[in-house]
Length: 260
Image (cartoon, rainbow, N blue to C red; front, side, top):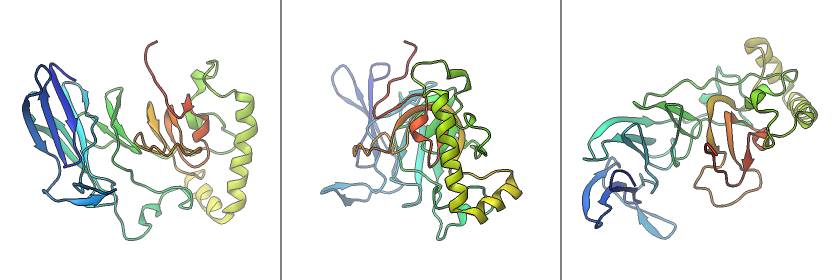
């Protein structure tokens, strides 16, 4: 709800704006590139469905259309004028590749990490918009999210928790010191040649950790309702990679962050 308007996405690939006072349609916008339908879970939907939650920040309404950055030309992102539905900014997140070319020339071990993201509920913090491993500014220009090259001697930096270590909602450093070497040494034993190559070329290896900027995110996506025991919501500045998702600040299956 924004300024007396109700903004919502729909599985038909459109964004709708209703007047809150009486439910009258104010405008609708087709975020999908074409008006097509597929059958998904027994329902007719657009291949480029729009999730119901529309993010409003900086006076603009942000939405995504699509399912995955690997499918149907990727995920389309729009910034709309909430009053009129006019497109102010737009972008496409497309990571499809025929092979694992995304791992070439990069320090991550591809057995534990893959580029790309599902279309998901957008999150905004610090003047940026986040969706999975993607970070955009408010004009929808994609931002650099470098890999966090952490070796076993640097144990806490990956999650960006140095200034949070005295807080009750962060795992104690004693257990960090215990867990991190176990995971890292296991990685080195499993992939010694690749780890050695990464160490020589980049200074360290990586299991998918990326420096994002602190915000709320979910490793399985906010729309995942499976409650799988290895997916978490967390408040962290680092995309977790393979083995540190359970040690963010703070992790859980549901998470609320605010000034109080």
